[in-house]
Length: 288
Image 1 (cartoon, one colour):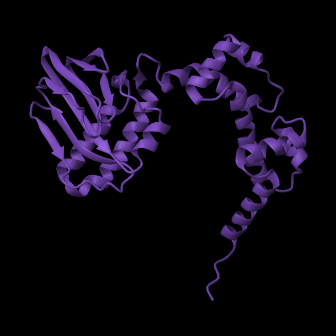
Image 2: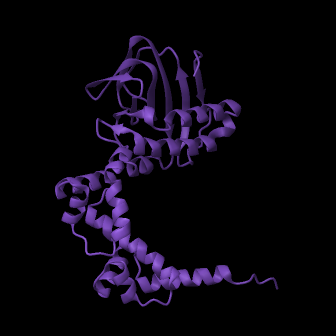
């Protein structure tokens, strides 16, 4: 970024797009702002250099380098610079599916994010500026895809309201996940998983819930189902009771019940559907 103020605003936003960028900008000399009625779109403001004080929902936050504020539409807020120089970049956006996307990524509340210096945020925003500069009105589709990447990375790498980021949490459970990938077919208890990571079962459960939204045992069951799907397709002649045993189910009826609950169809039907699909793909083209 340089010392020139940049702002791109889309005159016509395609509101049928799942996500669209309404504006994107960079301000090397950020000024004081007061928006008692908020902004009509989702709003991201990130500090590049210096710092400012950002207020919303009755709370005040120091927005220094490596920090950003995510605001939902119409959230009243104010911000003032607290250093001689405060440089920021921002994105405002909406979309036909923006609410469902924001909800699914658990970004559905106004919040402070930290740890942004460790993620790919700067590069994504830089790419968005380059695309807008080259062809403003015809860059909307490209910016939509960049915006989706940005939100995904915010979920992965951003630390939300002083909580560890998903990437940070995953590093804590990676060792257990890699171990489960090897021993999933064995009779494994929660205590054994916790002992492997040298933590308490309660702490391991909190780690998995925070990282995957699942308990360790549910994660193991889903891993077994994933392995079973591979076997069902790659080895069409193996009986279901053998598949169940290979992935850690002692009882075939339990395997069938769990598979149907997770996938919406039985292992037999799953195998038949994919076998039919593979045979159609491998059959010679009918050119007559």
